[in-house]
Every structure is written in structure tokens, then in C-alpha cells.
Image 1: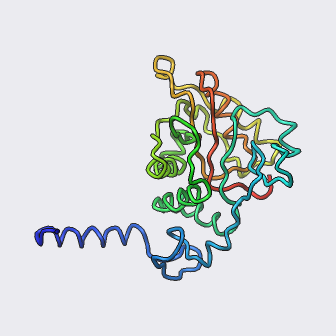
Image 2: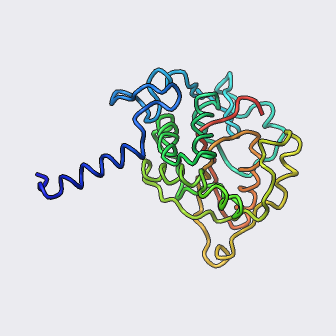
Image 3: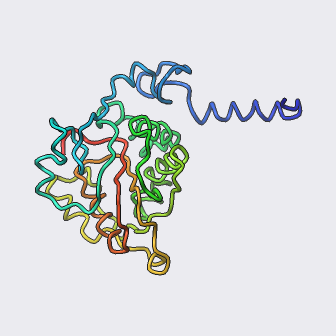
Length: 248
């Protein structure tokens, strides 16, 4: 039984939590209830979010028509440095709104429901030793104040029971945002963008890593990050994203 002495503190904590985690749907503004499936979305809006149904392309997460095929036509023509992708939902207006609020309006509490979206689609975690976020360049980190991929990775760590570590690679160049570039410009934009962290030369990272990001668009960012991670003997890399862009 809780001591009466602690009751005011408990009530204050509840009020603080209520402030930090608004009890309304971020899409339609309706009040949330305990029956809602994923925090931050009412069930009506959640049911409009399109989950990516299997079978999926091994590398980009695109839905495939036949289970006997493991990659889509586009991915057959590319070289990938990661082993597979876990992409939960399509990047439609509902999820896009949540990710924009997280990244650009500093609604950091929305990392939790984005992680919930991933876990709902993949209750069985990937067979990795650790999770790590795609790193931000220090300048971008200072501007934003946090790394949204890191926030999502930490929430996934709590849900899956997999440790979240500092990325074994760092962002060496402050490149143009990929979203502002054409498809054929994105690979060039990321050339030499990542580098191995110096301490990894002495202390190698885990062999199997889940590389976490918010959105998968062309895949150039995670692929270049994975390419550098291979230099330090990471043997297995699973890309984990909340959403996959409909068009790349």
C-alpha cells in the first residue's frame, strides 16, 4: 500500500506524465482511451495507417506479390551492405505527421508510439546483439537538440530487451538533407559522409547490429552507413525503420 506521504508526489508525477504525453490523438485531436491500440493515435486513425504486409522485399521492404521472390526488381540491380530490413508501415499522412512533429517540433515523446508501431508489426525482435541509431552530424544534432533515430532506438531497446549502443560510425560530413534531393543525387550526396569512430579500432562493436532510423526512402543513408560498419567486422546488419516511403 502506498504511504500517504508519497501520494502528493505520485499525483505530481501523473500530472507531469500527462503533460509530457498528451492524451489526444495527434492526427484528429480526439481524446485517447485505454482501448486505443497505439499511444498518440486513436483507433480510428490507427486503422487508416497502412501496415506493410508480407511478403516484403529483403532490402527495401516493398510488398511483393509472390512469397517465392525475396527482392523486388529495383533492388536486384543494386548492391546492399545490410542484410535485411524491418519496415513497419507506409509513410502516409498519419505517420508522416507524427515523424515531422518528432523531428521538427521537438515532440520527443512521439518516439515511443513510433517504436510501438514497429513492435506491433514485429513483436519478435530481430536476431541482433544491439541496436544503434543512424548518427546525425554534430551540427545537425546541435540544431535539433537530439537524434530522432536514437530516441526511437532507445524505446525499441526497452520493448525488445536489446541494448542500445552508441553507433560504431559517426557522421563525418554535414550533408544536404536527402529529402531535398532527387533520387540520382542521393548516393553522391552521401559519399564519405560516414566514418568509423576511433574507439572502435580498439574495442570492436557487436557482431550483429540493428540499425535504426525513422524513415526509409531511397535507402542510400542506411546503406552507406552499413558499408562503413562492414569495415569493422560487423557481420550482420538489420535495418529497422518505422516507415517506408511509398515512392522512392
